[in-house]
Picture: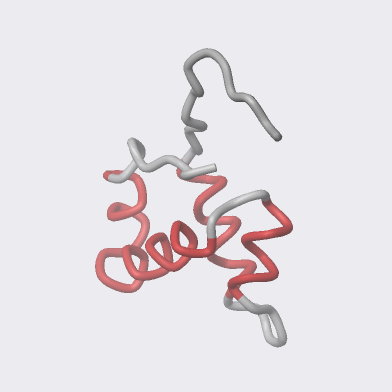
Length: 71
């Protein structure tokens, strides 16, 4: 059994980190799930970053600097 005490802090990521992760998912043969696990992220967060990038480019990801991982 795991007992969690204290207040968990959310991790914050820089725009450069978000872009690095998104660009890694665009490489041939890379899956979003694999990249997310490699970086210790939730796949849904990486999917969101990719969607934001496709909708608005770098500015969309930068505007979402308050985005944090669920883990």
